[in-house]
Amino acid sequence: MLGILVRPNKVTKMRKGIGKFVNHPTRTGKKLYDKFYIYVPTQVAKDGTFPFKDGDEVEVEIKGKTLIIKKAKG
Image (cartoon, rainbow, N blue to C red; front, side, top):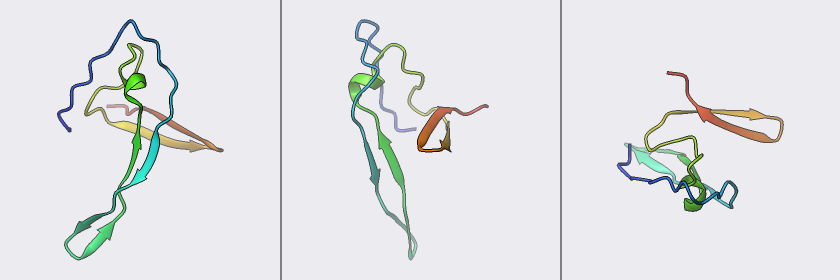
């Protein structure tokens, strides 16, 4: 958990935006590991209908050419 607070904005309806897919390689000992992130635009993450909060575990699935991200079943 990053400890970042994202306050939902129930007034704004921003359900679509342009984010980024970024690789931040991380060195552990002598090995270099790829660490990938998907950045969600702030306006989208603050939308009152955004389904995630900071620290939620997510399930990531590839279906055809579509990436599906949903809450992990706990």
